[in-house]
Every structure is written in structure tokens, then in C-alpha cells.
Image 1 (cartoon, rainbow, N blue to C red):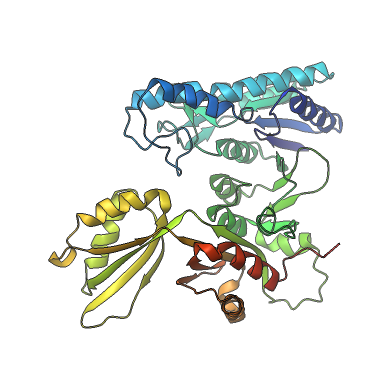
Image 2: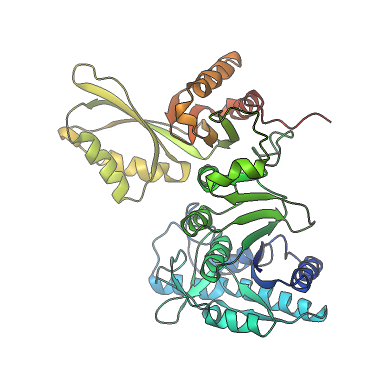
Length: 435
């Protein structure tokens, strides 16, 4: 079978970790598998390179949505091009060292950078999108019996310039290569042993999920789960790539990310559960959002379109939206944005005059969003009833609510975020059994 393995920065953090990865690669190949490996830069290396670049040029604080090496200041395309040239070297180092370590253990391996493995992207430096993958070189190396070690996170544009894929880009590289090659499985090997029902640092009794649908994983990734980059999950869903998130430190099973119709079988349901029973797969906490309220806005056609059109043009993504009932042709509109976007949103809205009137704004950074994620949530009214009852019992006031087929989210004061997370995790039966 054709196996694709991806090792993150913590898995190749030093020479001992690289040797351990090499042992695993050799064992996988000796079991009769064709093996393609994607590696990240060694832990801390990308930040070190960025630090040098930032020491040379005047820069603004990092833009959280675009990655730690992209600043919020407007820079020239030439600068971003050189930045990609610089940071792409980290993955090349990891790939070459891992190939050497495999050879030292009696295996045969070759390392390939983005331009050698045939990954073509658009010309959007620092956050490029993949346009095509030519797998000819990789297949020829596999036919020669080599393990192919690919530098993740990077490709080349039509002019041959190096580009990078942005934060978490090695995950995207791995899943995209698995799709192009028709790999039987794409293993994302990291320092955790799977996807958990919530952050185990906050809820120690969080448990590992044996299987999760693409859509559930997309929701959790969008809600801040750090295990998989959201673009990689979208790739996996689009091309039907079976993703196995597992530990690079031991051989135990992790979490399979698969189509929804496979989830019940992989989770081992025994048929005793009602066919349409709700199954919550996770609860997530986000602290990095802010709330904006537009007070006493004219409740006439076109006002909301102008407000959110201006925000969209400025690149400000809006999450939850709540409009109060109209009173005397006036209304309040409340919505949430990423906390990093709050200043931009405020600047945009301060300059607007929808309906010919200035906007009155109220902002609040002291919020947290808790989301319950699972298949078919919208059709189960008991989910909302249970959640509200649990929060009321903890004396937690709910400020905003949104609901979809896959998640129910509530906004509360930030001081209650962790309490709400723990209570909801327990209420929906997600706690691991006591030992």
C-alpha cells in the first residue's frame, strides 16, 4: 500500500527525534509499503528565521490569521517573496536530515524540495494556494525503492519562485500529496496521540475520539483546535483522503478523519444506540474573539448590507450575528470578530454613515465562545435545552447563541469560559471514565 506520513516540528525537533522518525520510516517501508514523507521545519526554526527578518526591517505585530511570519503592515511583493525564500529553508533542512538518517539505518531515501516534488501554487507569497501537483518525480523515486522525503509548507509559482502555504502549511502539503498520489492513508504524526473531545490541558478527563467526520473536524479546526490545519481538512474532504492523526512517539492508534458514513463503524457502535441518537464529538473554547454592538441603527433596507459589506472589503471576517427586534424603526446589531480584527473593524465602522447617520459602537473583548460539535445537532432540540440548563445551574449568563447542523455556540463572559467548557463536557457524556 502507499502510505503518506507527515511529521510536525516537534517530531523533528532535534537529532534524536529525527532518528526516531527514521526508525519508523524504515519499519514502514520494510513492511512492504511505498512511503512518502512530508516534514515541517525543526521546532522553533521558522520563528528563528522570522526573527532575523524582523530584525532587519520595520514591522508591525503579527497577523494571527495569516501566520506568525506575516505582519499586519503592508509590505511589497518583493519583501514577501524574499520572506518565502528564507522560511522555506527550514523544511529543506528537516527533509535532508531525515533522508540521511533513513540511509544511516539501511534504508534508501531521497529528499525533495517544493520545486522538485512538483507542487505548483499561485503567486500569493506567504499564503499561497496549491494549483497543481505533478507526481511524476515522486512516483519514479518510489519505483526505485526509495522513501521520498518532501519538504512541506512550500511550492513554486509559474515563474519558478518559491512560495509558502501559510500557517500549518505542511499539513496541507501532506494531504494534497496524498490526494494526488492516491495514498491509502495520510498519517499526521505529532506529539499528541489523536483528536480529543476538548483541550486536555483544561479538562484532564477529555478523551481521545477514535473517529471523526470531515465536517466535525472542520468545525473543531475552525474553532481553534490545533491538531490539524483547517485547509488540510478541507482538502481531505474534497478528495476523500483518509487521515489518521496519531503519535509520532508510539505505535498506538489515533483518530481517523473519514466520511460521516464510516464514523459509527470506526467508533465501534454496537447497534444498541437508537439510529438517530445525537452524538456530541467535542466541545471547544475560543478566547480570541471580541463582540461589537451597533446601537440604535436605522432598521431600513440596505443598512446591514452597507455595514457588513464594508467589513468584508476590509478583510474582517464576522462570526456570530444577532439583530434585536425592531423598535420605532431602530434596532441593535451585535456580532463577533477575531480579537485581532477588532481595531480594523472599529476603524471601518467609525467612518460609515449607513442611512445617513453615524454609528454608535460598543465593543467588548472580555468574551469567550464555547461550541458543542456533533453530527445532526440542529435536529435535536434537547442539545440546546441541556446546554442552557447546565449554564444556568452554574449561574453563567448567555450573551449570544448560534446554531447549525454541526455545532451550537454560545458567547459568555470570559471569566466563565473554562467553567462552561468543563460543565458542558461532562453534561454531554464526554468525560473519560475515572481510573
